[in-house]
Image (cartoon, rainbow, N blue to C red; front, side, top):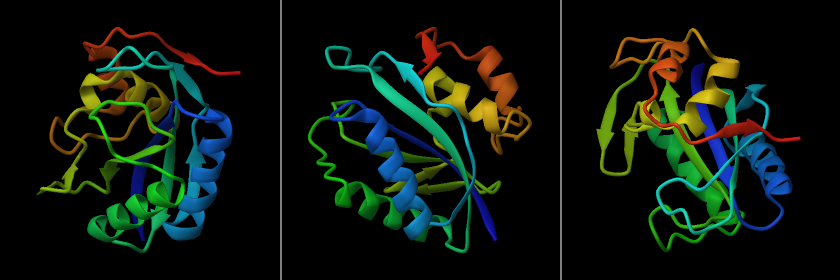
Length: 160
């Protein structure tokens, strides 16, 4: 069984409902959700003239390999109406694989560990809630250490 950490997020439509739908579809098509972080709200990152995002980290156990998992994730996004127009643009749902076991991959369609996770507070904060002692396979630091050292100072708050 493989262990993957995912980050779900979105800023269009009913954001909470979309995260719930994503969780349900991930459980159905990708693997068992073992842990889920709280939901966090963050101002848009990269392209700031858009609504705030809700994000949630998930730990899943899956029989899929990394390539199979990303293909299923892309199908889940498509089922939910995700249309890729602009980089960092608004979206109904976004699902990223942050970590997959301790694997390192550099495919055109999948880079693992996620190459920017250590620079994004909105990814590290929810991940640190469910996996603070998990080691980044390249940087050799825990998620908690990465969060503490994160250069991104964008405010990330628990959403209620």
